[in-house]
Length: 142
Figure 1 (tube, rainbow, N blue to C red):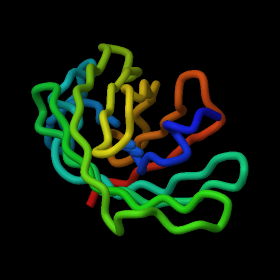
Figure 2 (tube, rainbow, N blue to C red):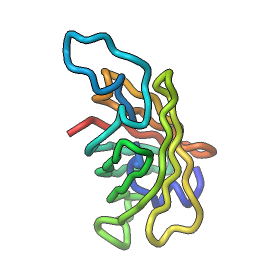
Figure 3 (cartoon, rainbow, N blue to C red):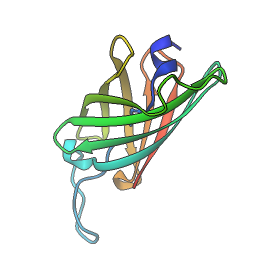
C-alpha cells in the first residue's frame, strides 16, 4: 500500500474515493440497460479498509457526467489525519458492464490515486480497490 493511499480518504475513497455505479436511471418495472457515467449520481458513503492498519470513511458525490468531489477521514497506524475532513476532487468513467475507474486527487497529498470499481445492487453500492495498493472500500448510496 502506498503512502498516498494511506493518507487518502474513501472513495473513496474514496472516493475514495470511491467510490461507483448503478444499472441506469430507470424506474422500477422498466428493463435496465447498460451502465454509464449517469448510473452513479449523488452521494455515496464509503467505509475504507487497508493494510498497516488503515480505516476511514468518505462521502463522495458523483455528478453523473464523470466528475466527483469527496471529503474523507482516514486513520493510519492508529494516527488521526492532520485535517479532520480532507477534500478531494477527481474524475470517473463507468463502462457498459458496470465496471469502471476513477482518479482522485486529495488535498495535501501528492500524486493521483487510481481506483477500480464495480457497481452492485443496481447502483446502490460501489466496491473499489486501489490500483497498486492494498486498500479497498465499499460505498452505499445515501
